[in-house]
Amino acid sequence: MTLDELKKICSECHGCSLSETRTNCVFGIGNENADIMFVGEAPGEQEDLSGTPFVGRAGQLLDKFLYAVDISREDVYIANILKCRPPKNRDPLPAEEDACIDFLRRQVEIINPKVIVCLGRISAMRLIKPDFKITREHGTWFKKGNYLMTAVYHPAALLRDPRKKEDMLEDMKKIKEKVLEIENEL
Ligand code: URA
Image (cartoon, rainbow, N blue to C red; front, side, top):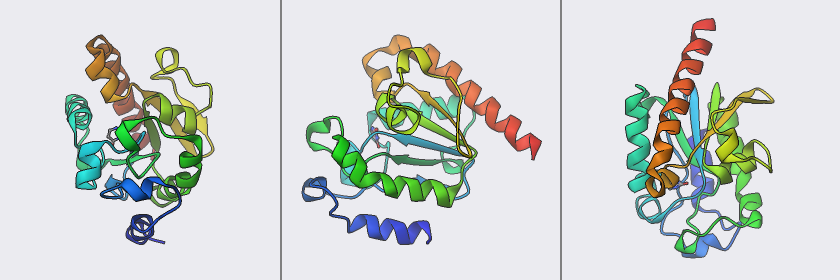
């Protein structure tokens, strides 16, 4: 199956009640051959309205960090755990994650990135380990199956607490270095 075929199925999904309140399904965007895949939590208001992940304030801040370490948004793939916006941006419910996670699983299979970067605690708890502690474990590498994974602070957390931006920059530099290292091995 191609990403476009999967996106079409996703746009017609009624696997949970979030489909009743969504404007758009926010499937994911970017390079189908990306070495780096970023995975956030769930669409916010701007994402729901546009159908594109990370375009609101948090997304614009993410763009600045990508720019700072010379990673082009066109070269990466960006998706979320949930494809539909939870009302008032509340945390995803476990049942909603369960209903949606196969879309992400298939996206990962198709894109087959070298590195998966979880954006924030919710994504890291789902993809890396349930007891993931973002304050302590951000920037740490984990090997899961074929994939090298890490987590960074969610850009929305940086908007709330700008003191975390230094850590974010360090983590993003490490991600850039790791990907260059892997690409040079090939
Ligand atoms: N926050 C997320 O986790 N994902 C988005 O797409 C936007 C904001």
